[in-house]
Image 1 (cartoon, rainbow, N blue to C red):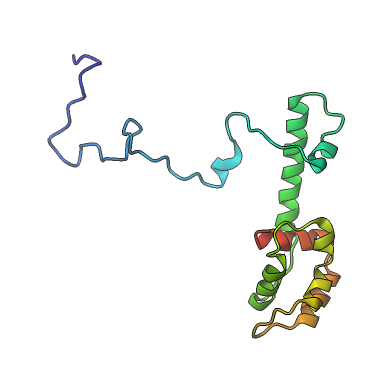
Image 2 (image 1 turned 90 degrees about the vertical axis):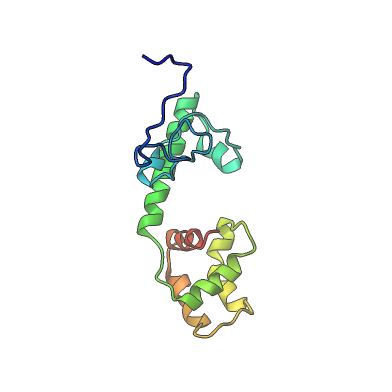
Length: 154
């Protein structure tokens, strides 16, 4: 029997030999990317800055588990809203909205003003009908507008 301090003998057959970067003991090993279903749980704690919206959301919660539960329920509901809301946009419409949203953070007021911003922007591209896009945004719910902004990455 080999001692635990001795290295494990490598088989002579190259097909049976460990591949560099494939084993957890190898320092060059890289963890595989997580699938969407595997991303459902992060082990450990994360520091979160509680700005005014999170402070309001967690007001009255007494301990970490209550706050964590509230944040997770809210995030789950928000993800459902994003899944079921939004607008079908053409590529020129997406480009126009991305140009408008590229200012960075979009506050709720700025999201509500997207229809007006479309009429005011100087952005143009082939196939863009600004009055039609503004009308589409005006008829949309706030949840639809938020889903559009999120789908654009803002």
